[in-house]
Image 1 (cartoon, rainbow, N blue to C red):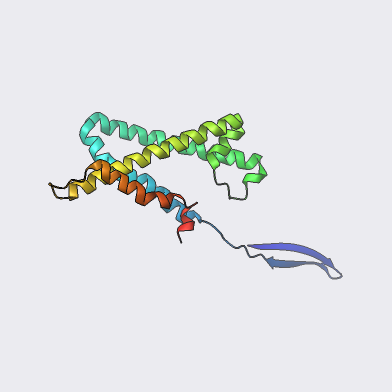
Image 2: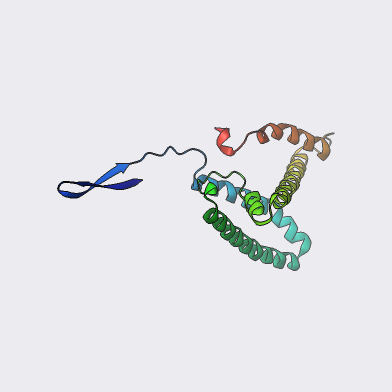
Length: 175
């Protein structure tokens, strides 16, 4: 990023350019987008076919409705975050780890932040349970028919293998 400073000398005004170097840490926009799209598309591609099959035409219409509701909600959340960043300079550095609770705190105080944090954690827990059960069901289908391994045992094994990865702070910690 080039910044310019003006200096007055005997011959008039001269322009000095100074190049600032910023060390980039954390995830960039492109990597973040890939992770977000992977989470959203991954869950949809894994669960959508069975949901449509079980619910028929009304399920398809509900999926379309949910797409529009999700797009609207994303738009509103983006506008809320922009408002919070404009009004509070401490959020402008781009390193806010929990933006949704920050929006809730600015809108409703501490209890708003707590409610949003609980909602996010509850949603993530439910999503994780669905993924573990789906993976366990797929693994049981791959095992021989006379296998003594059930979906319950496989679920516990998947949980035990995946839990250490959740102890890392962000995907940048993986490398």
